[in-house]
Image (tube, rainbow, N blue to C red; front, side, top):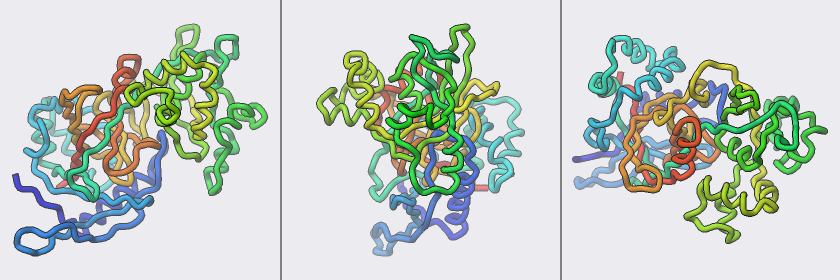
Length: 391
């Protein structure tokens, strides 16, 4: 099937840039986000057989990453006609709830009411009528994305410190709130925060019983705390200290502590059980620290960067400099640790500090241990298509 690199008109480019900037500025709750699109430029990519140059409107992110969109037809999307699209419809409606007052979503979201009975066929016809697929690429059209996974963990905790519950889950310090508003400097690094949270007047929300689980909660960005009474309370991202994230898995590989095959969440947790004396030193190598807040809502899933609840296996975290929050994304990858195809219509409803560039996505698996098993093992190659409104 013939494909060609799309030429984005001034209107189309302005629309995409506007949507990216609007979404970036509208974020109220998130795991982590970076600045929106900074600039755009037109570049010549290649010559067709006739010798005339095809030109492409490309955008450059704040950190200099170039991305482009390749014009596609629906048949180019692997197993598009086989995906159970009815399962993605609730997630799409969540995106509509957040974007329905913005162009061009006003008209599209109004038309969702025309679907009285949700079927995969009906949803497929809806998307094909109102959207057009574009493959997301960097400067190399054949490059494949890295797709990882995340989930909503359950930790055991208490409101008071005891012999068992001795690791503090910290809330947002008042000084961090003022620091985030205008300071270009960083807050304190992880080690100083953990050793001096009392003198720094950082509130303790809960005390949990496992240090490495607490660390991974910071990576996931949200979770649930089960108290001794059985009551479960949700916690979500409240802020961070401004430091870049350092992968402890990569550090363990570099130090010869584990092999690359064991560098999953499960492998790192096992290493921590076998090497308790080394855990604190390892965690301190990652100076980034995430603070939390209690979330009082009735939604089943955690709330993502779009400020809507995430839908298991239908919400994906992306780089908002590349893909506007709320937009549909078709994902082609494989199940964790296998070659079994995994093709899904997803909704870009979250972000992450490690999710940067056009070739990164983070698949939300859901809540609990089973979801954690999939998320911890997921490090797959894949491709993504951004679905843009054609209304």
